[in-house]
Length: 402
Image 1 (tube, one colour):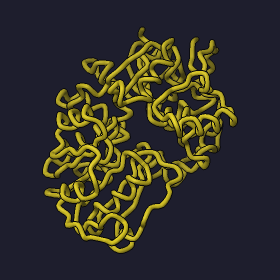
Image 2 (cartoon, helix red, strand yellow; image 1 turned 120 degrees about the vertical axis):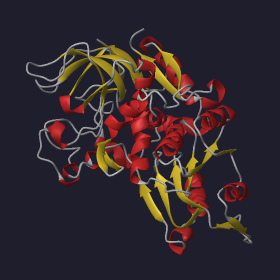
Image 3 (cartoon, helix red, strand yellow; image 1 turned 135 degrees about the vertical axis):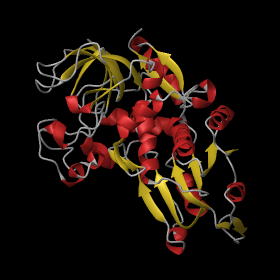
């Protein structure tokens, strides 16, 4: 089968890190450690289901890997060479005898590889349904790795076929188009922090960053907490248009600190140095960027006891003033992947709830899948995903049906 394979190279990774500091929007294929290869398919265990991949989204973590921007501390949670792609929509090609799955059924693949998949008894987080925080991602019968697409054994979605553990499959309703179903993974990544930090009636939530995760976040808040007010911060006009279509109450493009403070109802207190300090503000700040500046503005845009939720992947951050964290007793937390959550008194599997939301028919998904490319044109797919400003890209996907 044809597969897009990432091979680990420390010199290339460090060179990519240097290159993309200066050219962050330009994809250089000759530098990337990815190549189309012919590979055999070897399921890690007899009970895994063989899938024929249909569509696979390109995630921000894929881009960070190619840019050499992933944290060095995350290295133990991946194993290479690996077939890229963890936002997978596929159909069952072959199921083991006695399996609940049937050939031809469409599924999405929840990419997390916790204790159950590794043949281990559940660790404490897995016991609580928080398998996204599994303590055994480096143990068991599989190679080290937290998710497919960054894993030597488990395969990935940017290939003609892959194998998946049956517990990781979620059925796709017949009337849900492929082009919408492929948004499941990105939607689930936004749904988990919303379930864990759902704004209340009359509360204000800032969604900082209007890429695909930010677009999902603001839509989810308006659907699940319609009495909350959502202020979205975008970088480009096309993102502003999408955010307004998704229901944001107010959209700002690259606001100053003073403009953001006014948007969340805070008073600006002048400071001799440092750019001013807002007083009051939002109850929630969902950071979908993960930069030093977004962290700084998030800490300042929150009122006392407000919650800063880091949704975007972040590594090393520099020169952030943490005085507001102490002075206003803020809550500072992250949100990684998905597991189970609670909504309206019910315990829900986040990935299944994401499929249900997309299948309702009223989720505003138009425009979120902005570009698709066949596997052989992977270089152009990454060019478009790297350069949102030029191509107005939101979610870019590899279409294995082509």
